[in-house]
Length: 314
Image (cartoon, rainbow, N blue to C red; front, side, top):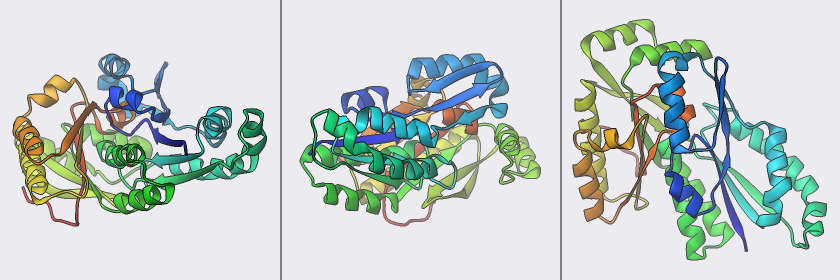
């Protein structure tokens, strides 16, 4: 059976991994003033757009996910021919309409695919499963990497579905941003009051950086640490301890809102890479999606891995 894997462009995975494993993207379009870019996870295009537009006006950006009709057209124009079963894994539905759009599109796709497949010479049925990853950015990548691994191992559709649904419930995402004022401006632009003026002002005045935790569709602060570099090092140290304790999949995904050389120079990063290598855990590092950067600001770090329930200690 030909199994397809679809993610949206907020899913932070390396560009070469996406291309090598034929992962299909649902692009999210970003508009900042007159500048418009459809995010196809081209790292150089993302960095160019970042330097030209995001730093000054990113908080006012508009992000436009693939519509129900665009998703339907992508499937009926290509995917129902190229594959027999597709897993479509989206950013958490609590933060984006992409999951709901994909669910609505799935009904039309399953109603309309037969003549398209028959015209291409396929008389067998087509099926798809829309999965809410219940997380954001780098943490989305953990489920997609596991889908690739399972597909390449010859796992059945049922085995893949059950495993991915289990993982979605157990992926932890952590994020540290550089600029709480940017986060507040972005939240206010979107009508999200989760980052208050007082906390943003206090955090910047004292250089306090919150560690945000994404888990099962909810995102919130789990620690406040003085200094960005210090906060990042504590986060990397904590993830290293979780790696030593044994993860549910041999995968850690990391993304950065800027050049990867800057990520690699952060304190604690080299040690985390060494810990992962020593414990047979693959590290996937990627430039953060343009969608992610306009929402959380440039220079942010996100990291995701599958693990039992735990409490952050840093």
